[in-house]
Length: 131
Image (cartoon, rainbow, N blue to C red; front, top):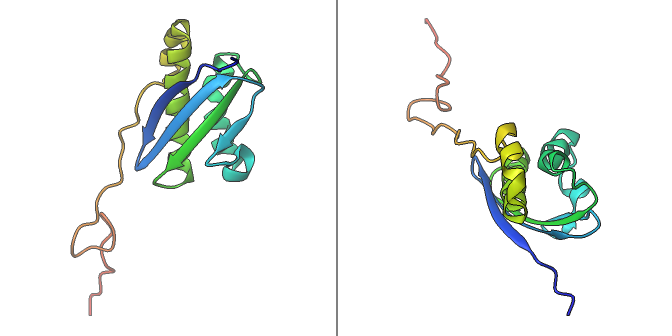
């Protein structure tokens, strides 16, 4: 039986949630059943996601399967990074100090401010007219 051990973790940022599964493999990254580069077309988002894997020096050694939902692509990228970092710590407890020092285990709690009544957005007012 060649059952691979999976490490599952959840990452969050803004209104996004990412369920991440990592296992020993050949470096495949799949997001919502689509290739990684196809789901995240922006290079900066791809770099953000790969940060914890590169820090742990596991590039090309683990497969990552991600279910991302909610929010936009940048929020999802942050959620995926958070989830990968948590899963790596589950996989190898020795990585925790380095990952924590880099700040990847910290949940970014900044949320969108709600829209107020009598305003266009949260703080933006309608244009003032003198006459």
